[in-house]
Every structure is written in structure tokens, then in C-alpha cells.
Amino acid sequence: MPGDMNKKSSIAIPEHFSLRECLGFLNRSPLERLHQVRKHAVRKLLFVNDEFVLIEVTQAGRHSLAVDFLTTANSDGVRNTCVDFVRQWFDLERDLAPFYELARNDGILAKLVEAHRGLRLIRIPNLFQAICWAIIGQQVNLHFAYVLHGRLIERFGSYLQHDGELYWAHPEPQVIAGLSVDDLRSLQLTTSKAKFILGVARRMTDGELSISRLQNAANIEMARSQLLNLYGVGPWTANYVLMRCLGYKDAFPVEDVGLHNAIRLALNLKQKPSVAEVRRFGENWTGWRAYATFYLYRSLQ
DNA sequence: TTCCAGGGTAACG
DNA sequence: CGTTACCATGGA
Image 1 (cartoon, rainbow, N blue to C red):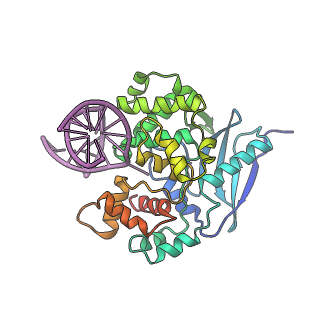
Image 2 (cartoon, rainbow, N blue to C red):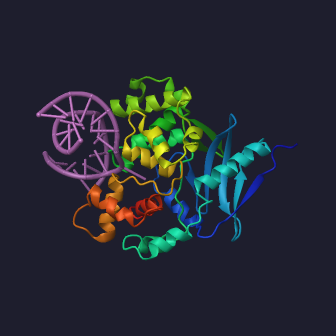
Image 3 (cartoon, helix red, strand yellow):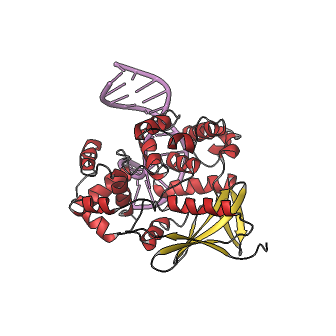
């Protein structure tokens, strides 16, 4: 079969979906290395079955998304895996109607869901990427987190060149597991974070930690305890990964400083709410606390 | 200059 | 059990 035919898959768009809003979130930092946002499209390099695949997601009419395969020689199986990835990435299986019903009369969320209608909780389906991003983001401002993560990716990740541009893929756990603490410290990570990330990489290479083990957890508490067993993963990181990677729509990183600031701005408070107060606000969002958090993140851009 | 940033661990009482 | 020091760096 000739390999240079531009192949394309299609995904039906659910109710309450706006590609523009999702791209707005994905485009929040110019330092992002793991996807590239264009005016009406986003490109991402995926590593599937030992091969790199560059995809581009665009809208194709009112009712469907198109997934273009910009690299050749993909099997049907690889293409289906990429389509599944996109479904998770944009959380397309979710019915947002109950969330919008809940948010409509909420003093904190009402304006946000109005302003960003159709925004999905943009997920990080790659477990190692999600945990690295969370650990790197502990206790540093978001900009610096992007700087550090960018260094990790460009030093130890892989890239594919296409039409003169570089597209990066996150380093695999196997690559990081073989490094030393000093290798990671040279990126200006703290010694602690270097150890945390090495530990996670090694748990993944020895099979003790995997996305399937987490997905097989009976409930959110069981998944959370798996994550909390990891050195360097506390309550915030565990809930963040449950939210961004595993797609638990009720995961709630209550200790999150960004969340606190977003609530302070939404309510025009003089100072940030305490963790106890944030937990109390969250009671109104039960069932959808991850979505509430994500919309509040969006308000900080 | 000081304080804060999408926290967590270890070492204290 | 609950507190506290420490971590590395950069922007406000």
C-alpha cells in the first residue's frame, strides 16, 4: 500500500464541546513542548507501539473532529489508539450537562461556565508525564514549572522533525530510570524532586506502577492510595493525577494554591481562603470537583 | 528586599 | 498526633 496518502479519522463531537475553548487552555504557555497549538488546530507527537505518530486535531464541520496523521506508515491499530488518545485528551466521553446544571446557580462557577462553555477537562493520559508534571510543579510558579519540564523533555525526550519544526515526546520511564540524581539536578530540579522522579520512573519500569493498575482500582480511594504510596506524592499530587490523568471528575486537589487564588479572585476576597474553606466551597461541587477546579484554573490564564 | 509560587518530607515536640 | 525548616529558582 502506498504510504504517503494523508490518512484521517473522525470523532463525533458530543454536546457541550468547544474546540476553541480547549485550544485556549492548551495554548496557555509558549514554553509548552508536548503539543503545538495553531489557530484552529493542535498537533501532538504520540509514541504508539514503538513508533512515533504526529497527529493534528481540527474541527471538521459542526459535528465532528478530524484526526489527521501527518506521518505515514500507521496501521489501523495504531490509528485507533491515537483516536482513543484524543477522546481521553479532551475528555470527550463526559456528559457535561449535570455539571452545567450544578454550576448555573453556584456563586463561584456561574460566570466561569458561561465564559468558557464547552471547555473540557484537558487530560494528560500519559501517566509518567502527568506525575512528572505534578512533581515538577510542586511549590514553584507555573512559568518555572514549564521551564523545568521543558528541560527534562529536551534533554531526555524524543523528537520528530516535520516540515522544519520539532515535535517533542515526553521521556519514557525506562530512560529516566537509568539516570542519577545529579543528572536531574543539572536541570535545576531540587534534590528531592530529582529523587521523586527517579523513584516514580523505577516503579514504572519494574511494573509496580502502571496506568492499568490505577485504572483497575475499584474506586477513587484505592487509586489514590496507590499514588500516595509513591515517594514524593502527597495529597495534592495524588488528587492532581487522579484529575488530570485518570479523569476522575470528582478528584479535588484542595491544597492547590492556584485553586485558592482563583477562588479569591472569583469572590473578590481580600486574602486566599484556607484549605478548610476551600473544602467547604467544594461541597457544592460534589461529583464534579475536578471540573470545578479545572474551570477555576482556566480563570487564571 | 521580601514574599510567593498549581507541596512534600523529615525532624522535631 | 500537629508544627516547622528546608528545598531552588524567578517574578512581582
